[in-house]
Amino acid sequence: MATTTNTSHHGWALLLLWGIAWVILGFFLLFQPGMTAIVLVQIMAVFWVVGGVVDLMNGLTHREQPGRGWRVVGGILGIVAGVIIMIHPIAGTLVTIAFGFYLLAFAALVTGIINLVGGFQKTLSWGVSLLGLAQIILGIFLVTHPVVGMLAYVPTLGVLAIVAGIVIIISSFRVRRMMETAPAV
Image (cartoon, rainbow, N blue to C red):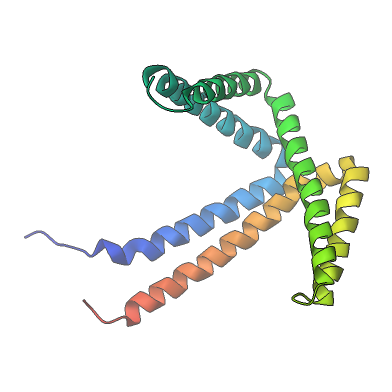
């Protein structure tokens, strides 16, 4: 006699595993930031190459598709970028981290200006303006002190990954509790 189980009750366990994976990634980013960043960027490079090949083939074989020229160009760029990063893993990782860092710094400046200006309007509060001011100060600091910011970038991602993992783990147990108390269908 075959035993059947309700697979929908295993969702909390998958969520738990996902949270544990995030915590492990976070600890790797904290305690082995260089090697972990290189491995993650190499995985990203493989995805770029595979995605580039898919886009290139799709663009070349579907002539009726609108915008296929852009798909071909994007595919070629993905392949070239992925191969360059795989050939030069350390340089590729440094460029990727620098790009993410500067993107974060300029995003802090832009959102800070938006919040600073928006906070003075009737619909928002002075707290939003203070947040905007803090974001502008952070953005200026990051742009003017890139080495300090980049050295802290990967470990900061590690802390965020650990926090996210803990939140996911707690959520998994909440889901389990809700499933246990929910009436059977």
